[in-house]
Length: 203
Ligand code: GRF
Image (cartoon, rainbow, N blue to C red):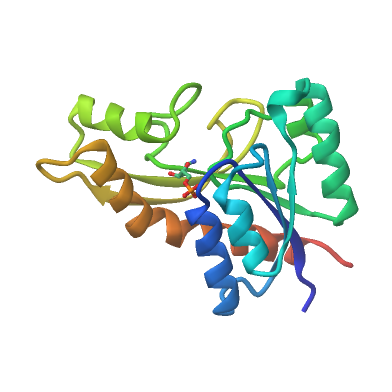
């Protein structure tokens, strides 16, 4: 079966990357092939996870370059590895509209809330969970969506709800959302996008 080459873009710990690696090793992403892990932060632990799994890894130190240079390097790495699908898995840089338009329905992101709640510019990491707790919602969750030029604004592919429990802190809620939703949804989303590409194309 033809496998679509997948790049995973990361900035930090990489537990979502680990979920992808584990699910691929379990045979649950038959239409995709994790190929390269790219970080905008050379210190990201996610790079070590990628190496350990035998994937190619690359760091592009974003802070030392302009956004244009960063995206040019990113595009060059994606082309070098013949990438067809890009997964943002805890990737903190915002990609420009120009870049995103080059990859229509080829970039997906995992966001730790039920979009359209608690999303968009400034909602990342623990801030998302703090906002959910401040609002007092009883249910939150995670969303896998296509990336377009609006932050967290692309078409929704998958969502899963997670209960907010009395006494939750942003940290406990983050952990529950990861365990109960993110680590399941992201591998499913990658398989869905890769399988769709295979179904719609004669190659
Ligand atoms: C996750 O909560 C993800 O939804 C968000 O950033 C976090 C990344 O965690 N976009 P990790 O690096 O995958 O552990």
